[in-house]
Length: 302
Image (cartoon, rainbow, N blue to C red):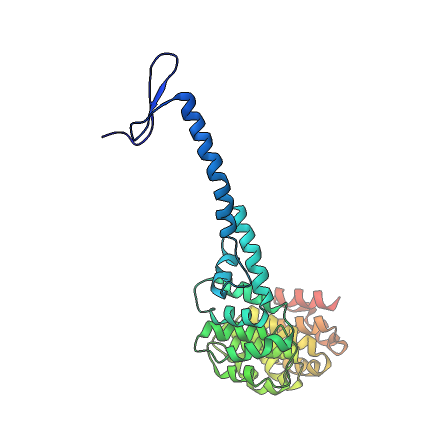
């Protein structure tokens, strides 16, 4: 069988080439033919590149997402990636609705691009879309929608997020957003989450109650200083310190009977608040037998 690649046949000073079809070409003729082929194909490659340029205005959202999130390794891919991102941002709420609705797919870029688009939109462009997505059948979609709603000021009606407090899969994210919105109506419904089995949910509840700043949360946050997890205790302590004077007396009352980690957290919180009424109680613990308690009293009495 004849080889499909050219082979050289020595014939004195001027070599000949036998091509796959048996044609004879002298070496100089072969070189000219190869150069001619390259020059003929070069313009076609430019046409091919132009033909593969992404038309952001006409491309469907699926195509825009594909190019916007892909790893671009060539100038053409990089150019298409830039066009795709620009086109996504230009489609505003339409793009946001698409990206959030795909959050259940195992691709982090849906969430990343959704947040980037959301941060560029005005509340009246994004909030209606996100409120609708809180009703999705997919948990990741509801979570992402609730999270992104926290990027905007509180709407006149927070029912869409309040409803999610009954959704065990999404409640933690809803608590975070309600805290950022400072929805006082949510306080009685957030307080029980200080005793949730999920540590992260307890942290979210403590943080949210501090952000809302409602005095009704004070006794529950003081109790949370007794939580077995340090992360929860610290979140509750920061929230009590943020509440200020309304929390001071409750902390002093609890300090009378508190022992162990609970006592130390109360001492730390009172110290962070620089509560004048706590000076005596802190001074009494400067000679405590427990090293940790004594050190906390010294540190926060200074």
